[in-house]
Length: 258
Image (cartoon, rainbow, N blue to C red; front, side):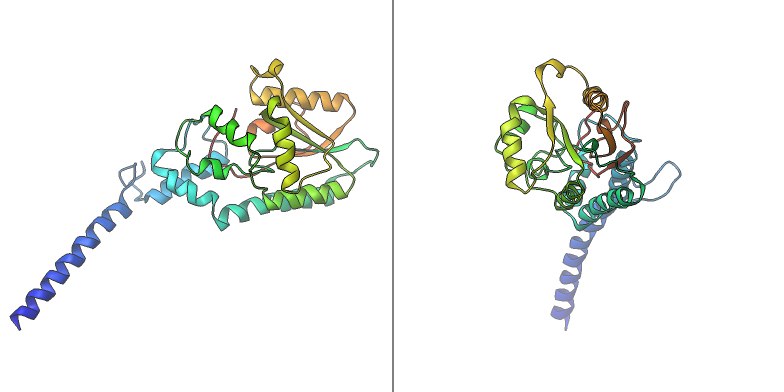
């Protein structure tokens, strides 16, 4: 009987030893488990709040995802939730498009799309680079291979807008030398029939992305285009004038581009 009791005690102690680290890890977070108002929170609460405030544009100019949140953000961008959040954005584009756009159908109605993490996904690149300062050379080398997958919900929106006779303008912060790789990548995953693809040339490389995209939109409107909407994953795709009649932002907590 004593031997059985000792064995039970050992099993119990082993179980407690397993339990304690799990509890400690689950409760640990970088705010020492409490907000300023004394609310007890988990690391997931903290990371979810950080991600939400990135999307609300309250958190800006971050260089990297906080180290404590890289696992959480990595899981999010590969999750059903990310797909659902993104699909809702493109569905709202279609609702707006179908109910509020008084199209002239004279070849001057236009819609603007960003490319990276709007039409094509960089999630495969960031799988090993989340939480690290962006290495532009490594990113551009990855882009030059033309292996970025399509974001399916954006592809559906792209095709739907195109089918209604709208001119599709692609404006990307990618550099001009990536043009052929970008075209190949887009076509290979199902995008075709856009009106123009505008990339950064050496003349405007020193401007911020927001300034560069704003200048492109000014040129488009001076050429007579009516920009009904813009879909992008960064606020720099919409900032500055003219802004387009409606801007729709896809979620992207992986990086910030000004």
